[in-house]
Image (tube, rainbow, N blue to C red):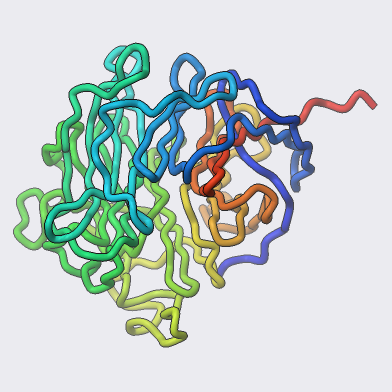
Length: 381
C-alpha cells in the first residue's frame, strides 16, 4: 500500500465536447500515449470546480465567490444569485455538480464555506441555472454542518452524485482533528443526503442514536476528491494527510477511516500522530503518499479517448503541480504511478473526464486556467 515511486512526465488536462482554445497546444509524450494540452481560458480567480454543460460550455466556480460560464475561450460576467460565501483562507465558493436531469431541470448543486456569528463551515445548496445562464434561481440550502467554528481550513466540500440522484458530500475536520471521531459532529465525515436535503432510507445511522443520521462514514481529515467508479458503482475519496499520509479510500457505509487515531503521516512539527498506522476496527487506505502531494480532485477514467488509461485513478495535486495517474491490477491493488505535468501548468485543483473522454483541469492560481487534455493528432511522418 505504500506509495510507489512515480514516473515524472509533464501533462496538463482539460476536457470538453467542443472547445475553442485561446493558446497553441502543447504536445507531450506520457508513458502510454501522446497528449495535446490546450488552454481553454485563463485569468480565472482561484477556480475550484468545473462542469461541462450540454451545449459545450464550461460552468466554473471561483473560490472568491463567483461562478462563470466559459464559451469560445471567454468567461462570462459573474452569474447572479450565488449564495454569499466566506472567502478566506481555504474557504469560499467550492464545488459545483449538475443534477442527472440537468438538461430538463437546469438543477445544479453547490458547496461553499459560509459563515454565521460563531465562525464558518461547509454548506450545500441546490439551485436552478436560468435558461440564459446569467442567474441562479430557487437557491435552497440543503445541508449545513451542525457546528461552525473559527479558522478557515479543511472544509472538504466535494460532491459525488449517485445513480439515484442522492448526494455524497465530503466534510473536512476544519483543522480540529478530534472532531473526526465525534459521531455527533459532521466534521471529518462523508455525508449522504437526498437532493432535497432529506435523509436517505439506506443511511447506516438513520435510526441509530450513535451518530448523526446524515453520516455515511467517519474518520476523514480533508477529503477534497470524491467520485464513483462508473464500472461498478464503488465510491472512493482522496484525502489530504498532514505531513505525509495523503490517502485513497474505498468508502463504505458506517466505517471509520481512522483519522487521527491512525495515519501514515506526521504532524507538521514532525511529531507522531495518534496510535500508529493500524488498529483493529479502523480501515486501511488503499494507497497513500509520503511525502504528501496535497491532492485536489479525483476522477476514475472510463472514457473513450484514452483506452490506455481505462480504470486509472487520476488525482490532481497542488503541492507538486502535477496529475497523478495510478494503475490497478485485476485484484484492485495499485501497482504503478505516473506523474504528469510536474510543475508545468500550476497547482492542479480539479480534474474531470469530459463527455468525449478528454480531461479538464483547473489550476488554482491568482491567474487560474482551464486546460483540456486530448489525444495528440497522429503524426504524418
